[in-house]
Every structure is written in structure tokens, then in C-alpha cells.
Length: 120
Image 1 (tube, rainbow, N blue to C red):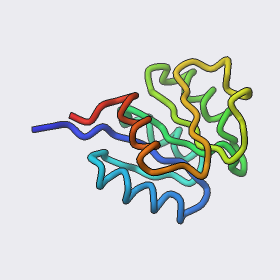
Image 2 (cartoon, rainbow, N blue to C red):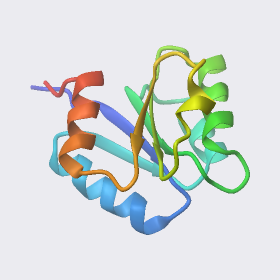
Image 3 (cartoon, helix red, strand yellow):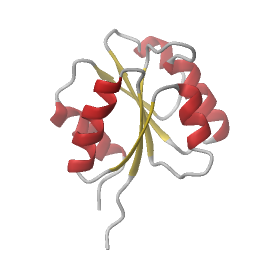
Image 4 (cartoon, helix red, strand yellow):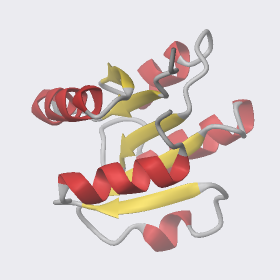
């Protein structure tokens, strides 16, 4: 029996969370969605996600703040940052963070996720 890697998707826009949930589940990942950084930080306390896929621009806690909080509590969790702007300079000094530009091709996103944590 194979284990489906658990991905937490964090975005303040429901249509994006829903589309990513469908895409990732159909591609062999287990998926949990959250609408904010605070929500995912609370949720990952009891879980062991392989990756957090997060938007950069969100109300309240932005992507960089979320990544910093994840790194403090869970340095082994991979993070994939989605952004419509070039935010790479804002996360250059953070380890284990990949950046995907929006809009992204679904295959490119899946390839990046699989490179981080192959589906078995």
C-alpha cells in the first residue's frame, strides 16, 4: 500500500484552494486546505505534512511570515510558495523553499511537488 504525501494548500481565495485540491488529489497527493497562515499553523501541529503550498499575498500573515513560523516549529517541512509577482528575493535567505510563479502550468506545479517529495 502506498502512502500519499500530505500537502497543505494555503490561499485566501476559495476557488484557488478548490482547484488545487482537485488537481493534487487526482495526482496522488493527500490534501488539506486552509484559508490563512494562522489556520495552517494550527492545523499542522497534529499532522505531519510533507509540504505546505502557500500563496505569498494574503491578508494578515503573508507568505514570508508563514514560512518563518513554519521554519521555527517544523524545519523539515518543505514549502512551495506561489506568487503572481517576483517574490523570490523576499525568501532567498530561507532554506528549503521553492517558488512557483502564478499563473502556473498544472504540470509544472506537479513536477515541482514531485521533485520535492515523489509520490510512491
